[in-house]
Structures are given as C-alpha cells and as structure tokens.
Image (cartoon, rainbow, N blue to C red; front, side, top):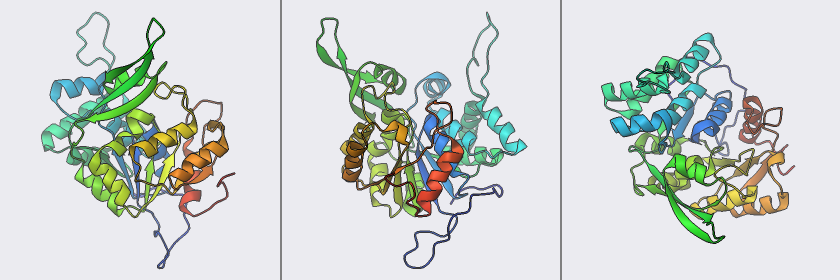
Amino acid sequence: MALLTGPLPRIPLPQQSGAAGRFKEPPSVVALGGGHGLSSSLAALRLLTSELTAVVTVADDGGSSGRLRRELGVLPPGDLRMALAALCDDTEWGRTWRDVMQHRFKSVEATEASLDNHALGNLLIVTLWELLGSPVAGLQWAGALLGARGQVLPMATVPLTIEGDVLIETAEGRLRTQTITGQSKLAAAGKNSRVNDVRLIPADAPACGEALEAIELSDWVILGPGSWYTSVLPHLMLPQLRDALCRTTARRVLTMNLATDTKETSGMTAADHLDVVRRYAPQMHFDYVLADPGAVEDRDHFRRAADALGAQVVFGKVGTLGGHPVHDPLRLAAAYHDIFGGSEDHADA
C-alpha cells in the first residue's frame, strides 16, 4: 500500500497469525493529523513499520502555505511537507532531503521579497502538482525523491477552511460569541477564550479516495497528537472520512497531547479533550487512548471520559526530557510498540 524506496530497520513486533491475529508483521498503519503533532507520530511509527500512511489536514491558511493557496489555488502544502520530512530516515540522504524540504528562504533587506519565508519543500510539492495534475501523484514523486518510508495523502481533494465560534469577554464584562474564520486566526483566538464549535467549509468536501482506501485496509489507525481543533478534529468532521474511520475493522488509537492548556484549548482538561471528540463523532469508538501521566490532572475523570469512547487508557511517559511538551520519537515508538503487541504493561498505570 505504501510507496517504499528501500529497507528501514524496525523495532521487531510480535508475530500474530491465525484466525484471532490482527496482523502479520509489519502492520499497516494510518496516522491522521497535521503539523508538528503528526510529524511526531510519524517519526515514531516509521521505526515500527514500513506500511505507513499519513493522512494530513489541508486547512492551513497562514505563512508560505497560505500564500501559495491564495495565489495558485492549490492545497496548502505545508503540513504535507512536514509529514514527508518526518518520514525521511536517519541516513545522510534522508537527513539532507529533510533539511532541504524544511529550508526557508530569507530575503535580503530592502529587496523585493517574493520568496521570503517560502519553504523550498512547499515549492517543490506545488511544482509536482502542476506538472502531474494530481496531488496524490505529486506527493508520491516527492516521497520517492526523499526516500520517505511511507506515503503521504491529503485528507480532502480541495482546500478546506476551518470556522469556529469563540466565547469572548467584552470590555463591559459580558460574554458573547464571535465567529472566527481561518485556521491561523482560530488557533490564536482560543488563547484567552473558549472555542465552542468548529466547522469545515465546504462541509461536504470530497475526501481523498486513496486515504479512504488506506483506512479501510489498515490494521491500526492513529489519531493525534496535534492541535485539537485544527489538526485532530477536522478528520472527524469530514463526512466521508469520518464514515471510513467508523467502518474500518482496524483498531483505533487516540494519542493525547502533552499539554492541555494550549492556545486552542485554553481552560480545557485532558478529559475535556475526549468529550470534544465524542461530541463530533458520537458513533465512533477507540480501542486505546494513549496519554502521558503528567498531562492528565484527574485520572478517574479521564478514565470515565475514555470509557465513553469505548477505549482502554494506556499511560506512558512519551515526552522529551526537560519538561517541554514535545513527544520523544523513541518513547512514543515504544508506547505504540506495546499497544500493537498487545502489551498491557502501561495500561491504567
């Protein structure tokens, strides 16, 4: 299923076979999200399997991606670029192309800055799209050039816009609802207010057919970590994608963030994050919720929220050392390894 360009040493997983077995090594895994959160999960998952597909949000409207989206009418390439970079291996080839994809141009002062802050990878991806006439084919060619250990797909075939309602306090001390349109604006607006509702425009946008097929054929589906309202929830709001996630026979893992009080989720607890997922996809259940114990304030409340999703809680220290809310690829890979192998060593610890 995945576009592969060479072998990658993997952490061995227990072999499962027979009628009760869920998969034979390597398992087929689909990871959904966007931005830095998805990059973290991909950096971990590529250590476990070569059958890896990233399904990426396409609602970014800021920075280089936003400019290309507005000027050329293309899907915003930034999150797709980051996913490809995360799938590069640790060889000299992989590290070099990862850095090439992430390189940003900086214009000299007092000059016309047409390329200023554009990521080279964004320009490369859009070039392939224009030459090949297909976002999926363009991403496959980009992945082949990088030696990416898996494939990267957009969640939808058209650019999406995220719109949300935010509860704000006026100068007179009254609360009122304000509608914010655009991913970058919504992410910033939630810093000192509460996001009440989010929507996709268009609401019935067509999902990427290859992404739907990958979900149907997968052994495991990983949702999160990432910006909850703009990278995680959009996958549950697109009707065709949500239906595919509900229908698949794959086991589902919801990966929690390491910090709950972010710009988008001001004032929310870890359990609140799960409640929001159930609100947007009440018919969907998860098999596991993976959380770092340091990010869960009330474990009993969190377990009850996970129970409502049909999920077993797995606690594991998956953050980097030093206290920064960043997932460590090796620790996260070890946690996924235990879950995929059926280990319950960390469950409800």
